[in-house]
Length: 144
Image 1 (cartoon, rainbow, N blue to C red):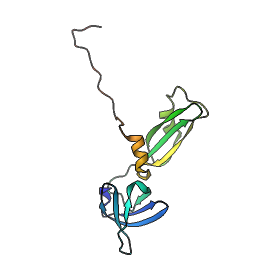
Image 2: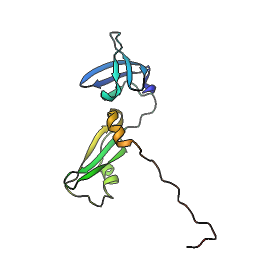
Image 3: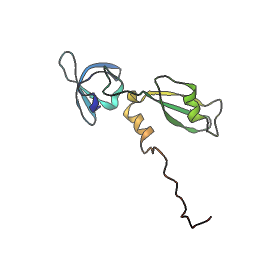
Image 4: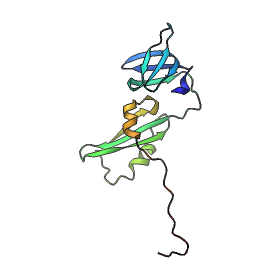
């Protein structure tokens, strides 16, 4: 949120709308100067939605998609897809290879990454590895 310092933002915190200019960003909270001059402390983990008036840089919307099936005790899979709206091709990309996919599987979106709670982001993305390790090639003289 450091990129949002000086930008007008609308927050939804525990169902309460807070609107103003971001004046300071800390590890666990954001200070927002409202139109009446007050500076409430917005706790980041309680933010359910925020919308900046302008984007600090070129914005690419990212949706967190999920699938799960409680009937077969499937813990589910999450997938980050680019785009503001859901498309069937987005779900096919991560649900297609599943060997246990069935009609009772549930899928949908948890929302835009910016609007997710810190707890959800931690649960979904903690320890995530992006990319593939390079393949180990055998030495030229070694035939297997």
